[in-house]
Image (cartoon, rainbow, N blue to C red; front, top):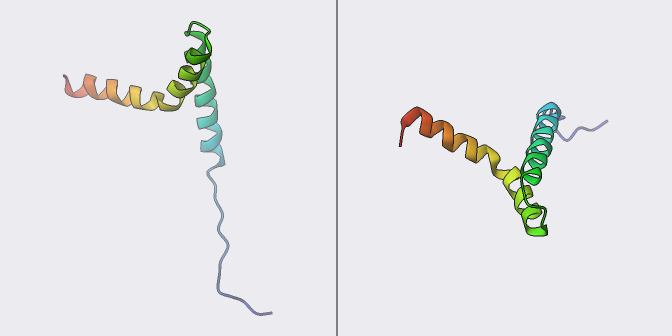
Amino acid sequence: MASDGRGSVIVRDGSWGFFFLLAYVGAAIYFISTSDGSFWAFILGLLQAIVWPAYVTYHVLILLVGP
């Protein structure tokens, strides 16, 4: 049997993907529940759920470094 020299690749990042999915769903529920219920507020809530780690990082750096 001939071999082309390629090995197998095993990716074990499934548990982190599930964690990030849960974090996104939780953030989406939070941001949508605090909106006024309009269509654009719903869309904005989904977008905020995507970028919420940037909010957290920014505020943590402000606390550590100062304004």
